[in-house]
Every structure is written in C-alpha cells, then in structure tokens.
Amino acid sequence: MRVAVCGTVGSGKSSLLSCIIGEIPKISGILKVCGTKAYVSQSPWIQSGKIEENVLFGREMDREKYEKVLEACSLKKDLEVLPFGDQT
Image (tube, rainbow, N blue to C red):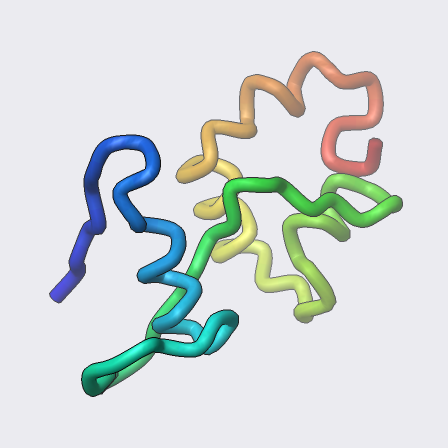
C-alpha cells in the first residue's frame, strides 16, 4: 500500500512527515509504522562528482537497475545531450 499526504500550503504535511521519520517530536498520540518508510526532501542534495555517482549514491553498479532508474527519472534524454553523459 502507498499513501500520499496532500494538502494546502501550511497545512502540516511536512511536519507530519518529519514526525513520522523522527525529525521532530510528536506532541501527543501514537505513531505506528508497519513496513518501511521513505522520505524525499523538498530540497535536492547533490554530491560533487559524476551524475552516475549521484544516482548510485554509494551502491554497487547494477546496470539493469541503473538503466531503469534513469528511465523512471526521465534522465535519458538529458544525458544524451551532455558530451560525457552520466560521466559528467
């Protein structure tokens, strides 16, 4: 199951998610998370290094999975216009 948290600006979406991942303390209530959780920040964080290194983020290269990630992130066309592709 996937859950999306939607709401207007200032409604508490980021605060709720920050509480779920333990970044801010909850004021009251009980929080139960079954399975895994993931969080994607509103601010991108890019390492200095090649695009490939940023995509792999320290993991071993799995060419098939890597290509799927490039496709899912719509990076293929962007990389095609760079002279060194993902080695930029």
